[in-house]
Length: 307
Ligand SMILES: O=C(O)C(=O)C[C@]1(C(=O)O)C=C[C@@H](O)C=C1
Image (cartoon, rainbow, N blue to C red; front, side, top):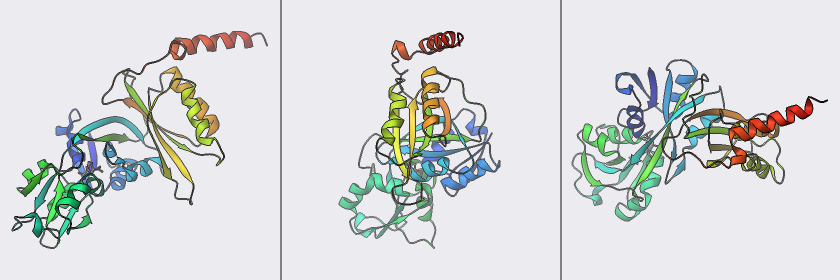
């Protein structure tokens, strides 16, 4: 396997990739940003990409949500969870927090450490980096000017960086969810604890449009585990919904919800059904079981046979 990931080496994304079976023997290509990683998949330069999609504190990763929602279709085949903790690494010569004038990290990491930074390095200006590891490596680059970086403990250790403070995150126990993305192909078999991801553009801007979408799930007992609205970029007020549901397209209730959604918004994108990284099998009422759907369809077919 050949994987692209949000690089350089030492990102949380690389840690996620290394959790995959056989990843240590695979070819791993660092990409400068999420879009570049997904382009490598679309163009066939790699078999798959690993990119962040959601953080338990900061929410959805817009670059990923937007990139998988448009352009050539992609498919999610797996998800990976990584516990997140950050350290404050500093440039050589910096020994106290008061000396820090510029701090660099990924925007999503900064959002998770903002309160700590306001309280402890209030004078420091934030310089965005393309990843936490890129910010950390910049500390060894004389051409870059930041004197501190917020990064993973691992990259600080691997690069021999001096760590001034550990655990600078505002919320203990944060987790980031990563996805493995391929070109559309075979859908992983259901495991019983699965997720499906959908992109739902609003076909019509009218009262109750979102309710109409949600009803498709409610009526079939399909639980949502994430729903986010993202601007389409076509103008103010134009949004699409990015949704994760509990269940697999092989299950009748999920398939029925998809079919209802397709009638409401034919432009919907099915981004895949894949094993959930954690959780239990969802509760399913008897009337939403596969058997109930199959039996109900047979009953209607028998009625229609008399036409
Ligand atoms: O910069 C990294 O190390 C990443 O893998 C990206 C990323 C993200 O986009 O959320 C991943 C995990 C952390 O939440 C912070 C940054």
